Every structure is written in C-alpha cells, then in structure tokens.
Length: 167
Image: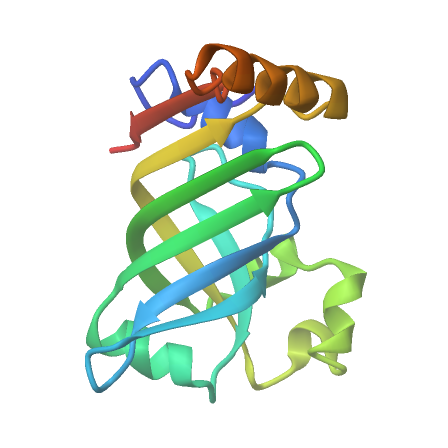
C-alpha cells in the first residue's frame, strides 16, 4: 500500500475506501461563483496521493479550474456504506507521457482517437484534506441499530468517521 506521503494515520484508510470507486463527483467554482458538480471517472491515486481524471480540453471545468483551482471530490459506495469527501487544488496536465501512463481502453468511449486525441488532458488533484464515513453495510447491522435506537432512544453508532489532513 502506498504511503501517499501523508502523515495522518487516517490517510491510508481514506485512500483504501476510494481505490475501487470508479466515479467521483467533482465540484468546481463556476464563472458566476456558484458551485458546479459533474461525475468524473477516477483513476487510481499515485504514489504521492494525487488523484487523476481525464477530461476534454474544451469543457467548462477547464475554464473553471483555470480561474479557481479549488475543487472537491465526493466518492460514494452505497453498497458498502462508505462515503469520502476530498478537497484540494486541481492542475491541468497535458503531458503526453502522463496521458499514456494513465490511459486505459475504456477511456476510448470519451476519446475515440485514444491518447492522440487533440482534446485530451488530465486533471491532477493535489488533496489537502478529506473526510470519510465508513458505516456497517449489512442489513442485519442496520436493523439491529434501528431496534436499539427505538428501544433506548439513542442513535446507533454509525461507524467510523474521521477528518484527514492530506497535506
């Protein structure tokens, strides 16, 4: 497992929770100052903990990131009851070698010309902080928590939750 260069003991768990989640909602600041979110196909984090996404050069998010590079990524795995939020700084990367390194054949659906597509670029997100919620996923555990809450009047333990320093 990568260290991701982070000292926070919860960083490893955060990266473990997102490693198999293929879609993240990326939120940027629109040109009018409002927040704009869209689903993005997530690549595996690199050895530094940076998160990578393919994008079209001619897209609103490119303009938004060029103006304000603060982004938020939201990962959700409802089947496992795992949820992660990561905020950081985005950077546009046009390096051909990096594009080839990150390329996978399913990306051809968006980039029919492959890595030679003139519209292809990468967005690298340098995480600054994150938070995760890791809840029990079995129906039996949820039913037990519900019954306990009804009987005691106290909410059940929702599972692990932690804020994570990713700098």
